Length: 179
Image (tube, rainbow, N blue to C red; front, side, top):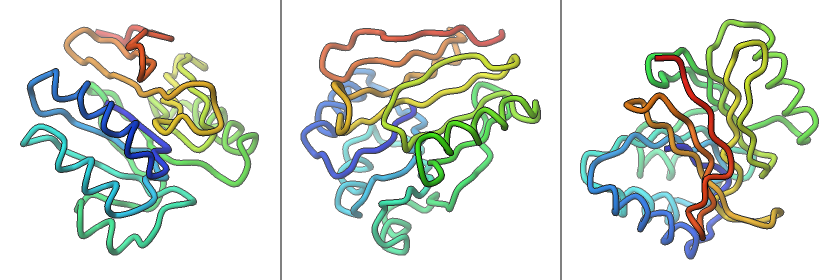
């Protein structure tokens, strides 16, 4: 799963954790920044099924990185490289404005080095293909600055990525990955 921009919204975090617990198995989770506080990250980690792996890219609003790293070892400045279903991916939060962030992401997609580009910061869910590269912004788990809280599901067994609405579970966008 991929989330971003939690912004200390513990109500929505609790809803998300119910979704994850219903899966009944450990998950890999990438958080694309703006968790904000160590207590929010601790709530996330403690609410995930035992054995889940959490990777966090620091965002522009995140609190003390040292305290965040005390909760999760894998907390890093952006960008980081990750594997998504065997595809080479880069994960970042964002840069200054939403417009600049989207320009950088578009440049990365056009560059062709990465198969998947993951980003947050804009609070707008995006799932698209640019020059044969997958671009994913899961939107904001907090729901702040938008009309809905969203997250992304990456299902390697089904070779699919989906953006889902947190409250309804509705699939808002979906793409197939190469098998």
